[in-house]
Length: 173
Image: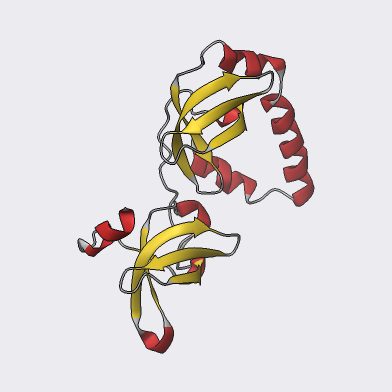
């Protein structure tokens, strides 16, 4: 499926049409056929990835238990446990490339993941560089390299940092 094409098409839909589509998608995802599709392919102890909407990234996890409509997983990193719907699982191990820029400047929330390196112009027109530690509704929380401080930065003023100094490695741990 061409995700960018679908998103472009949805841009011309009315809110009511989007709501109708949401209801249809929700019904499809929660159908017995979809649940059985996953139950036939998953088992306790299996390592999977699922898309975490909070962090906009795939999370590697181990399946602990299959329930009727959800499964209990434990993150391999951090050992957090979550009950997630079956359809969150990236069963086909698809890559989720970041979407292209919106053309308005800055970065769209959908383009960021927790752990991404970014920069922005801070107070007194100083360049600030750091790592995304949280995706909020309108801002990203960025941990600054120099002093470890945290800033809530609007997506519109963030810029991606592709290759950075080894200083970033301290933030990764």
